[in-house]
Image 1 (spheres, rainbow, N blue to C red):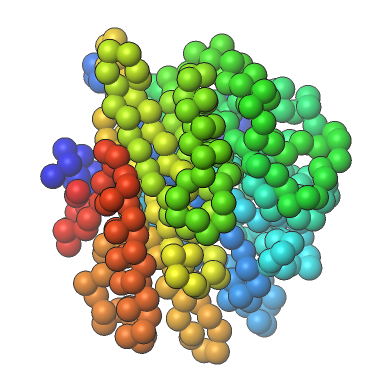
Image 2: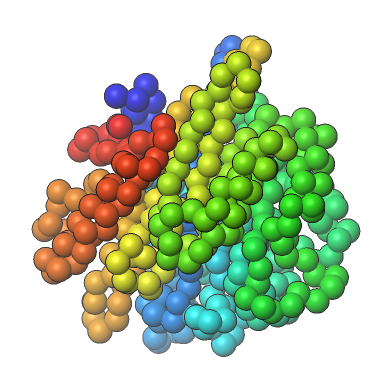
Length: 385
């Protein structure tokens, strides 16, 4: 059993988030011990299809509430010290819409934050769905909600000031960088910026991050081939290149299906390296095989007197349960291991069987391809691997 398994029994107490000029500080008192630890949780694609918008709407007041979406996974999110997710919609205002030009109510962001998600990565292929106006509205809305975010900026002055994002907690300083392969052919008009995945500009940002002396540099990349469970050569080549430049972790989104996870453990010549090529869909209305779920990866860092290293890396499988209730589809993110032995929880046997198929396919893929990263399994009382 993982030495920290018992920690999974308790929820995180959310820290106050303070956005400062060059970083944000999630305030906490440093532990007066030799070794410090921090747990990071990374979450895949949070989407907002039409059916999700309709599901969240109160038909009488025309207000929205997404809190129930995360009710069954809130404890797992909140347990981590820092939870970071790919926020793959705009908050561009009414009219709200799903694919192909996403604009969700701000209540989706609020529900994510209420569930324990601390930071949004905004650089993805749907960031410019409503043009510059949508990008600016998303930034302003998240700022008004005091939800830290990165990857898109009003102008170069704002990017120079706020980027790289520096996360400070538990005596750690972490640099978070975020980029997308593109914006679906929609041109982002200057001065607005959505970070694009180009080796030269990313390399320059890595150097800037290194100058700030963080304990780790994290790349959250929107990349890869949609619906392909194998990372492309472009992905693996880029990962190797960015690791050679000094990056410690690479977290991937965009394919909408799971791809492998690798933990290359430190030796005399290399630091710890984590590569997660795709976390899949966290919540969406994509219901076809392999697209109806994803994973959250939990990574623990330890700071000793003379070193910083990855002390644990495991993942939760998650699945989107979408039953029909009172003539509308509901959406609930389930931690798979908690519910795979509870067929009575599901309204229909077919729903339970769909989750079991997702679990089976995901385990077949990840058990074969993952390196050093195992699934977290719920014992009935606590999580273990």
